Amino acid sequence: MKQFKTAIDKNFLFAQETSRVLKKITGINIFQNSRRQDIIEVRSLFVYIMRTVDNMTYYNIRDFFKNNGKSYDHTTAMHSYNNYGMYSRYNKKLDEYYNLILQRLSLLIAENY
Image (cartoon, rainbow, N blue to C red; front, side, top):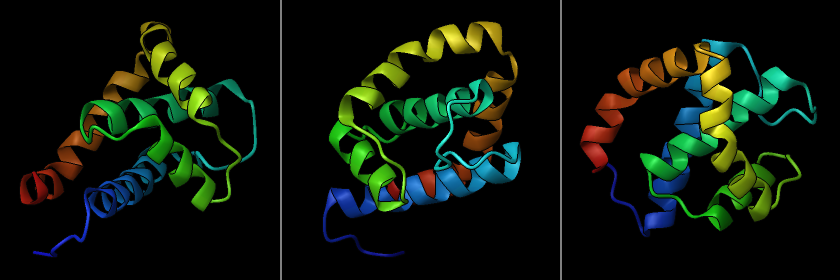
């Protein structure tokens, strides 16, 4: 098991793996500069997972997006997190994606938490 220097290292590893699995499941690149509804909703799912499962701060979420080439602000992350409930109410696939992602990442979660 890898030893992390800081909690931020652990957060970024989890975020990187989550974004990889999310892209594999949905076929959507959350770092793409687009305002298409399907991309916004999957980005919102990502932020929701980072906040609820990984306890990642909005500033760290912003930094993660910026490190992956996406212009993003901490208030954008807040807005995305706050709107996840509405998105998932109208797009039932988001809940399916959420469950699939947690299932695939369960080993990583168990090793690091």
